[in-house]
Image 1 (cartoon, rainbow, N blue to C red):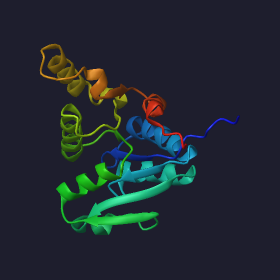
Image 2 (image 1 turned 90 degrees about the vertical axis):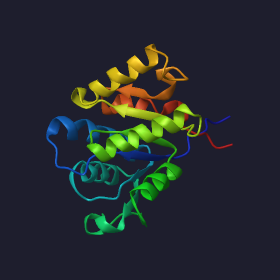
Image 3 (image 1 turned 45 degrees about the vertical axis):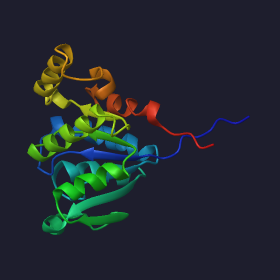
Length: 188
């Protein structure tokens, strides 16, 4: 009897399109290389700038596929060599398309848009409306404040399920990738 190979996943990332320094790009690149080496598809905001570009480049260079979801007003920053690129009508539609396409969500360093995306997916998980893994890559303590707030919400009864069931918090790219392992599908 041969071991079954896990099926490739569509891994959505929420992250910044800003140019960031090495303390953010290095762990993001590490995570992205693991995604590509495993033959997974990166589902991302489609941008070819900043941290989004770093992650897409690393996935592509290590053998993964790129599936972008952008919006019309960001078309000029869309990656031209993506395996697929969809342009949503607006940011809300973009977020819905990203989540619908994903087998898991990993949140990397980002700004207000990323914060909006992570809080929405956590709210959906809280209500049982999104049953896929959500991982927070807490690079260089970037999300320490959010994690502290989530722990308080958990401790004071604001969350209907334990925080550990809501989100996996990881400090490195490898740890973030490891959080996805239980979610890997094995073909029948």
